[in-house]
Amino acid sequence: EGNNNAIIAVANGDAEIGFAYWDARVTVTEEFPDIADKAVAFAYTEMIPNGGVAVSNTLPDDLTAELTTLLDDYADSSDEAADVMFNLVGLSDWTSETAEDEITRYGEILEEFAG
Image (cartoon, rainbow, N blue to C red; front, side, top):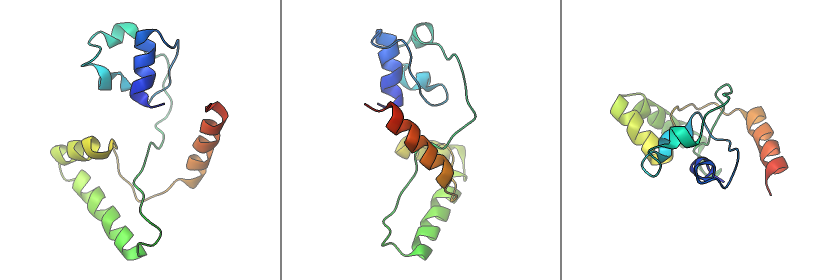
């Protein structure tokens, strides 16, 4: 499981194919400087939701909205802030919108292939 593990498994020859987010090879270049020779990106999809930040359902809606706005505004405030947020939680874009149908579909796909 995990994008890095998928790429590493292919690089080590433990898997013939792996699925990861948009060219996750860049995350393992320190361990595998020749990763571009060992694993090739053979297809791309449209960008899909990846991850998220969750809060307890006991948190008041107004506080959840305020935290969402603060995170989004900070992430958009500068390239450095965007890097901080990516390094903190691995997300490269922020939105307060929840794509329930997409989350459900990816859950179904995970369930089908998990195991």
